[in-house]
Length: 258
Image 1: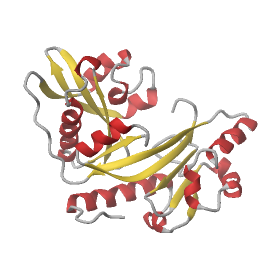
Image 2: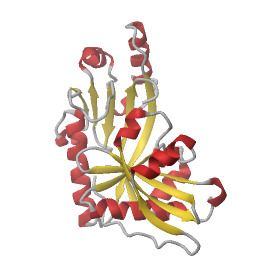
Image 3: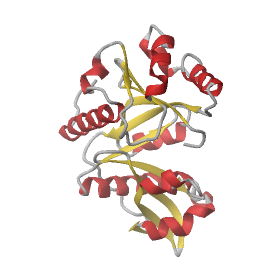
């Protein structure tokens, strides 16, 4: 669904995002509009190493599942497509089924997916801070501290480290005060993760680094994506402040720690 008064930028970004998600799931973009549940086999070359992912843009729901669980999911899927997004309905039983087969899986609760509502505009760096783009050297220097685990990934998480691309940092002197990091989200999409160091929280720094990174992403011809849990109200508000619009929701089943 496209909101009233949608910008051309948003319409194009949403179309790109739908196409990207469809390719990742192994379905057609039109399947998101079917007002039903569509279950497909997960492509062998999918970007994320998941056993199952379900995505809805608010109309229908598409479930993409690896071949070894495809028949089981089809046999246990709920009649109402939106109930796939409720963990006790399908996700938890799938985890138990995997356990019975000797495989450890875990599910993640639904998230919210955001896209920029218009061409990103970077908020000016406030007085007393210096802002600049950072690359792998900054990531490798700071990731082990876990102080910026959303922006840089958790220490030792090899998959997340492999998809981290670059970031934007506000420095207070030599110390990073706020960090936004960009992760490969597949086919021209870059996901933004953000953290503010505890001494600098409450100063409005998160929107500064997020919008500056979104602008850098757009300048490279990519589209920024932003995700958070529905219960993460601070992150939800930050997304809206930065001009992002909620467009979809997804749930995942994968090996623990993914």
